Structure formats: C-alpha cells, structure tokens
Image 1 (cartoon, rainbow, N blue to C red):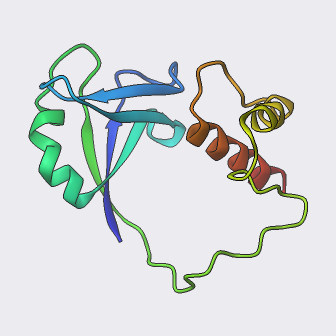
Image 2 (cartoon, rainbow, N blue to C red):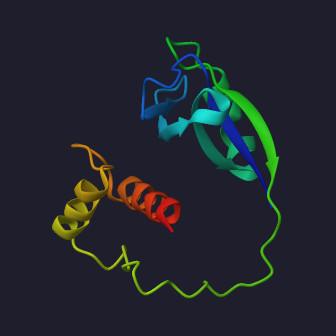
Length: 130
C-alpha cells in the first residue's frame, strides 16, 4: 500500500498537532508530531494527494510549507484484527468521560483533543507499556 506523508519541519516539535490548510482556505485535517522527521506529519492516500496537491503545496502562508514523502507500507496478509489482550479495553466502545479518565491516568489527555487523536495516543501508550 502506498501513501504520502506531508511533513512540515517549520513547526518543529513544539506543536503536538498542526492544521493542514490549502491556499483555497480549505483545511484538510491536522498533522501530528513526528519526532523522527523533526516536525509534524499528515498522512494522505495517493489519490487524495494527487487531487489536492496543488492546493496544499501551493499555500505559502506562514508555517504551511509541506514536503511530500512517498511511503510504501507492506500489505498485511491477515485481514482479521489480532485478538486484543485482556488488559486492554475496547477504546471505541468507551464513553468520552471514561476515555478522558483513562487518558489522564496515562498522561496523554489535553483539553481540546479530539476523540480519534486521544484513542491513538492511548493505544500507543498501552503498546509501549506492553
């Protein structure tokens, strides 16, 4: 599977999330911190990148310089999800209050964070702990 990773090194590692906006004013989402690349990164499919690249890369506003990196990810042979360890909760089934409580206990919750980003941070933290 191929995808494009848009990297912004102007922002550096001072931001956890940063908006990806085009010159038309349309926002495409939020890039997240990517320490190995020294900035923030936003993942796009090849099709989405080809459709929107002139808008995103054409934006020359302050800290909106995005550099594309083309990545190839090996296709997973197993389609089924691996069995979840018994100690890891089903994060998608948790209510927001329970999810934020778990996020606070792991030290990853911040005010204004989205549910999807919080669940990804919790999963990463639980994976590190295992």
